[in-house]
Image 1 (cartoon, rainbow over the protein chains, first blue to last red):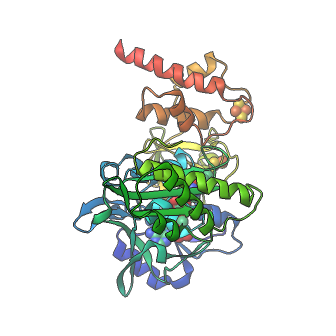
Image 2: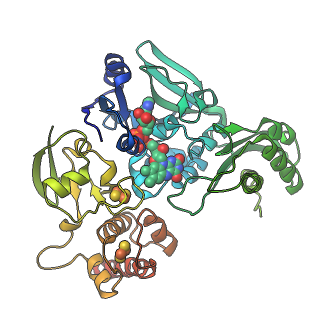
Image 3: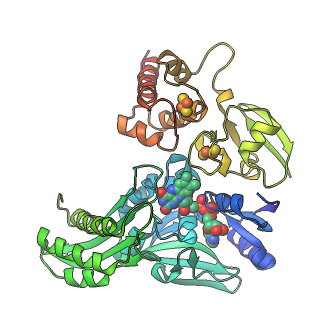
Length: 287
Length: 158
Ligand SMILES: Cc1cc2nc3c(=O)[nH]c(=O)nc-3n(C[C@H](O)[C@H](O)[C@H](O)COP(=O)(O)OP(=O)(O)OC[C@H]3O[C@@H](n4cnc5c(N)ncnc54)[C@H](O)[C@@H]3O)c2cc1C
Ligand code: FES
Ligand code: FES
């Protein structure tokens, strides 16, 4: 790694002030599992590296009238073991459990995962399916937007200079919404997703209500499959209806061919993933 | 920068450049060469140590992040009189071959058993998914962890 200055922020205010002071010459370090790999390969010094892992409330998980708040600094392990997550958004536990291996989950944070913004990120699909918002803090104050707007492209988010991600909010209306997550990799541990998928839906009188389907690793950013959702909304729960929605979802994705998997294999995985996660959300046993 | 941490129960200090990883600090400043440098990017687990009791890859943590904390390396597990039960079972079963992955595997296993004293085979595999072994095929490693769990349970019942 090229030499840099190392500082620790004790509070979000302090971190935001340091971001303003150092401009582009500062990088945030949360768990460091993406940043250190980056810095080991970088030809240039990042200037200043600011450790935010000591900011206690940045990792807080809580529920209020707004919904379920997950602090950007919450580690994947914290998410897997938090009782509020288990109660209100258990599919997040399944997603967190698929990140890397235990050593990575003990350090890596949900905020770092969203900010790195690779298409295969495992935190994205469930949060998109549950229509999460993100809260950003900068020198000019706080702004809140939909997570889908936060993702701009591969390794690119809407974060402006001097801004940091502080909080992720699953809106109150979606707490407890039945949801499922699945990840397909080349092996179970320590493998990036070839495709990952999440679905969420209320079931009212045996019919899908407000279904949401999100896919990762199949487009430049995590996407929602709105045509499949529209086709599903109001339909009675059945294997046939689910299979049809999964076909439509595959049509909405744009997976690529690469050395890990072909496009046609990924399209098959999408259909299977959407079928299984919708079945999980609907409480069916699935295939 | 100056860092101070408690390593295997002993307080140690060093003055290192900020871009020093915890792994480099342990190996090169303090001669604790049990934690190994394998991939240097979080994939192989050979550098696994416990920081405040939690398994992490020391190649992905800066010395500054470990400042003020409790570190356990493989050197801290045995004392002069006896092996840790995990080390003993690994030896009894000949669970390792070249041994390069061993310090990381044993510390990952310790973290697993500290948090889940009675793991299923699937849970053991999950707990060791971040540790690569190029020699053994894992079968005896998994057996050794399961046997240690039984042994520790028997000890605490006695
Ligand atoms: C071996 C290994 C396996 C992995 N496997 C997976 C996997 O299976 N699935 C997966 O999705 N990911 C995986 N990852 C990637 C990584 O572990 C995750 O993305 C992790 O969640 C990153 O979090 P972090 O806290 O370590 O981020 P850091 O490395 O600390 O930061 C990542 C980036 O986000 C920025 N940042 C961090 N926090 C904030 C904030 N609050 N505000 C603004 N910017 C911020 C940093 O400046 C940096 O650019 C793996 C990584 C490794 C090393
Ligand atoms: S050397 Fe740290 S994980 Fe391989
Ligand atoms: S015993 Fe040789 S790498 Fe595991």
